[in-house]
Image 1 (cartoon, helix red, strand yellow):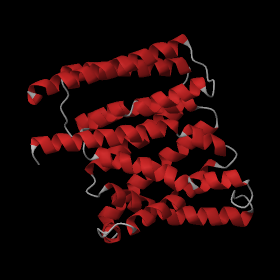
Image 2: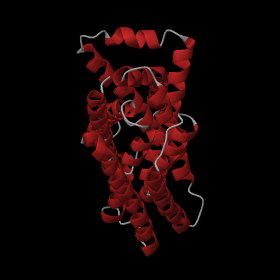
Image 3: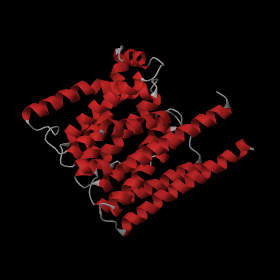
Image 4: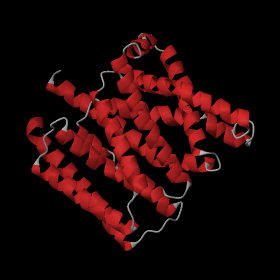
Length: 302
């Protein structure tokens, strides 16, 4: 691939990842409407309706997408790696939905502030990516902001740590995956959808399921879980394969920033001076990283 083509691919990947993170930042508005439903059931619905949505998208394509899905499921190694990705993603979803619906949006945002630091660490230790001194300074600045948020909570942030760990390793697996975004997400969803469907059927049999027992609005929201889930994940998978893991990690700050704003402005969670200071450090790190990246591109453009 030529240098110009590589830049174009990286630009498209960065835009897709940034849009994905912005959508994820707004997702608490969706899940809070379903707070009365068991989070495990919500995640099961998310799997089932996501699979139907993804299979519908593949059926409309003329590039043999279903054959690629069957091939990915045809070997133990491929199925095992994708199953691990699916488990990590499902754990992340479950912790996130539970955290949002129990009033911990700020701690959820903290978890996603931590994800970029996990991504940078994995990029350095596993993928041997190089960081310039100014980028290290930007990461250090952001790390101080995250540390201040941890201190402000007054306890070990289990929700945040679970979110950061599961999604950080999920991003690493997607970076190393040979599957395309649509194929990879479909394979992951297909591996766990039978378990999710079995759980939903059991819930309905025991009278604990939501479908048929909630209002029309809640039915529409539950059945929309496939679209709400799949579109940003497709954007994430597209972006993850085209940008460096460190860049992907810093774009990740978009989502927790939007979540942080929702927590304070919409859900009125406490916003202390300590939290404001942490927020300033994080954005300072982002500004430093962006300035360094723009400066580094100047000689190549010339």
